[in-house]
Amino acid sequence: MATTPANKPSAYYKEPGPKLDKESPFESMMERFRFAADLLQLDEGMFQYLASPFKQVIVSVPVVMDNGKIKVFEGYRVIHDNVLGPSKGGVRFAPDVNLEEVKALASWMTWKCAVVNVPFGGAKGGVRCNPKELSKAELERLTRRYTANLLEVFGPDRDIPAPDMNTDEQVMAWIMDTYSMNSQRTETAVVTGKPIILGGSLGRKEATGRGVVTVTLAALSKMGIMPNKTSVVVQGFGNVGSVSAELMYEQGAKIIAISDISGGYVNTDGIDIPGAIAYMNNNNRSLEGYPDADPISNEEILELECDVLIPAAKEDQISRHNAHNIKAKIISEGANGPVTANADAILEENGVLVIPDILANAGGVTVSYFEWVQDRQGYFWTEERVNRRLNRMMRSAFDNLYKVSDQHKITMRQAAYVYAINRVAETLKLRGIYA
Ligand code: NAD
Image (cartoon, rainbow, N blue to C red; front, side):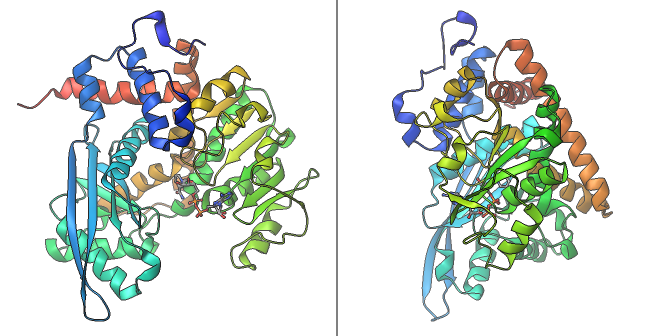
């Protein structure tokens, strides 16, 4: 595959420079966006439209701290796009949150929703704060004031927040309650990732890992590899990594290495995953000292001989520095942005099938969509129904992208961007530009 598509003058495509590996996953994403825009021959106006966020809001969030003093935090909400439907995306609380990051993550959500055919646009929000330094009462006041300042932005038909870094079910419950108090009715569908008792969905917690496994099994089947003849390495053993490992294990795969922040653990005879999860749960959520495997570093684990590698920890793990050493046949991106743009071409050259993050980990947003649907119906599905529908949507998204990739002779990642951008652009053409 050539790195520039269709041998034509490139309007948007920029050769990824060596600087990329040090840059944000978003810049890697933008490289891929430009490539797809070029392949689709998007006209410049459409490109500008899709590259510009629809709405960016910055709010001051004053909070009376436990000591009686007022402290003012800065909060953000960016709606990248709402062409396909109300916008959807998490809210993060972290000391380094800023508008640029939130803008980037919002557009990422647009492509992710479009890839799995979820009728949502993309958004993201955040408050610049250090949640570790806040008491629970301060966190609640911060969350409620942030929500109150965004009452005109949020709404079940407008913009629907969800958990992200350092925000959880409790934070979602406060957002939902604040919004509901102000609209004088209970509006469960205004957020997803809520506690089950407040209208959350069964299966949401496991959804991302479950989706990773659905697309991994689909890729294995395309390669004619039986799940029970598959060796798997999983980097990161949190929500996404541990569920992916467990479900692959249930399929009969041999999980030869796992890791978390404490380091990696390898056993080529196969790791007993339910045992490793039990060990972690009894060990303060850490794999440190896991006895039934040999220690290995988080860098080495990526280069092990295996069929499937699931990076499920953090961004920028596979770059042009180590991409040459990857021996896996399939990389299934559980994490967001674990492979940099510069590594893409190396992996492609070496015949590694990369299932891109905007497909592989889209199970989470898919079940968030199910949660929103159930809240609006006021009728709740069994876990079995949630899982079955999740499986169907992930499988169908995989098949769509596989077809696009085959048709244009491009990678699955390029296909994901081409498919998503085309879907949003086609919808926008039908809707037209309101004047
Ligand atoms: P988590 O906090 O539950 O787990 C993260 C895991 O990675 C932990 O085991 C942690 O110890 C490990 N880790 C952290 N730093 C590491 C390092 N340097 N090397 C190796 N391991 C390290 O988080 P999660 O929810 O499982 O999310 C993991 C990734 O998946 C993130 O990139 C996240 O954005 C992405 N993701 C998560 C969801 C979801 O629904 N949870 C959805 C989409 C994408």
